[in-house]
Amino acid sequence: MSDSREYAVGTHPDLPPPLSTSGAIGWIRGNLLSSPTNIILTVLSIYFLYKVVPPSLNWLFFDATFNGDSRQDCREASNGAGACWAFVKHRFHLFVYGFYPVEQRWRVDISFILLPLALWPVLFDKVPYRKHLLKFSIAFPFIAGWLLIGGFGLTPVSTDYFGGFMLTLVIGVTGIVFSLPIGVALALGRQSNMPVLRVICVTFIEFIRGVPLITLLFVASTMLNYFLPPGTQFNLLLRVLIMVTLFSAAYIAEVVRGGLQAIPKGQYEAADSMGLKYWQSMQKIILPQALKISIPGIVNTFIGLYKDTTLVIIIGLLDPLGIGRASLADTKWTGLTTEIYVFVAIFFFLSCFSMARYSLYLENKLHTGHKR
Amino acid sequence: MSEAQTSKMAVSDETVIKIHKMHKWYGSFHVLKDINLDVKRGERIVVCGPSGSGKSTMIRCINRLEEHQQGDIIVDGVELTNDLKNIDAIRREVGMVFQHFNLFPHLTILENLSLAPIWVKREPRKQAEETAMRYLERVKIPEQALKYPGQLSGGQQQRVAIARSLCMNPRIMLFDEPTSALDPEMIKEVLDVMIELAEEGRTMICVTHEMGFAKTVANRVIFMDGGEIIEQNEPNEFFDNPQHERTQLFLSQILAH
Image 1 (cartoon, chains in turn purple, brown):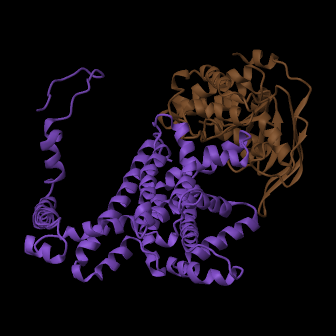
Image 2 (tube, helix red, strand yellow; image 1 turned 60 degrees about the vertical axis):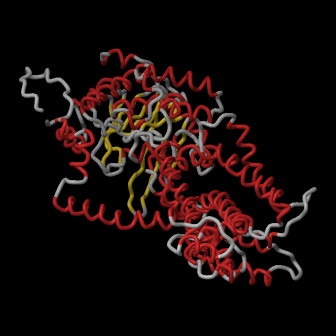
Image 3 (cartoon, chains in turn green, red; image 1 turned 45 degrees about the vertical axis):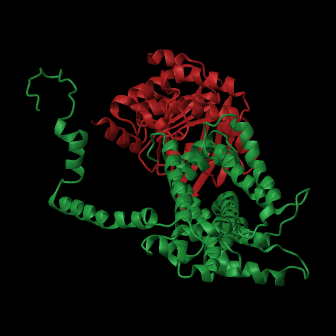
């Protein structure tokens, strides 16, 4: 529908856009059928989805067996057409708690419940009683450490029994929480005009980045003993935590350095000319902007760290992947590799996808209409 | 505001900025050569000259955004040395307005204005915000207080930048080509604010190409070329009767069109 009316010069009103370019039909026409190539791509995609989605859903849910005591039960129930989730169900506690003593598992449960409560005020602004909850967030690492390791009235549990998702979360969350401040400090140190500090930071970053994480984990599990006084008891999990944290801190440092370099020189000059001291201008002016630009890179590093926790299998810690592989040795359930790996994959995908979505949410929230 | 009125305004005998035999190099490039300049309290100085002549560098040396390598700069009785205490003391007394505004894009206008008073002068937040609103009213955009810099026009942003400097109540204001990045229709709104400031008798050094502004408010116009101060005079003399041939050439070029 076109409005062909004439208006006097300077009095033309704002008109709505033509109907053919708005609404559902307009969207389909514009985005799916706009050109021959586009039409071909649309058709191919629909065909692909038709071929992939229904069989996947059948395998995952409709033909799957959820109850049973052995692989034989699954075969009988569904002729082997669907997944045998009974296996995963049977092993679920192992996946969640590792070898944590059964009668003490409530401590892990409480930690799992408290974790989101501690993260909530950190991740979001509009949280009731945020100031008080933040105090809890700061205390949480100590509370969780006490709950999981024990002592002070609780039965001590050796970290050798840690495993499964609990181990992934312990390593992942600790690594993420500590590597961010260390990484930011390293990035600032690398930009410092004090040569000694700069050289220390550059050497550290380049050394850590230049060595595979597996090597560092080996160093953590064996070599550190040579450097420490003989007889020192230095917990293996703690060593892994330190190594994973330092490793991702080096990456964070480089991501943040990129962000710092993107801040126009004028921002530093404006802060300086107003008399702000170095730490004030970093805290109030430079870092909020640099970190905002670095969010995608930082979250990318975090996701990498989180998935790299599976590497601890190499030095004998049993994360979900390790539990899964150990479970495969069970003769009652032989040959269910796919189920195990799909299950572990879903767990990691859900965690990492939430991080990615949070990153997008944060970018939108911090967008204040400036392009710089 | 007529010329007669401005020139009547009192300039005290007290020297607030003293630059003595100051030199600066960028690597081996000699950007500032033997700069000598005394600025009296209440004086309004316009610095002009072709690009690359060292005008911006000179005023940026006054609050240590650039470091000079030889000679002395004394601001309000404090000598500018590597001593951070002196630098901080001087920066508290010297406000600066930049060509590209340099507002903090992640903070609202009100936060931009109250940041330095809160963190440098340790004012209570409420008081700092009241001062900020007062200065926003003076630059005629109080209604923008809760917006972000990215949502404002260039002229509005520059007025906010001026208000931001004023919130620290500096004795000296430095302007580094404040209108060069603006559209013609926005230049006037910024110049009007600057003229008002000049009327208050605040010490101002302004690097600008706005010769009309120089004629209206300046007590003294300084012409720089090749890193040297070539000529300085009160505006009427400077424009009507330039002494040095480089000044004459410069003026003929900028006034030709």
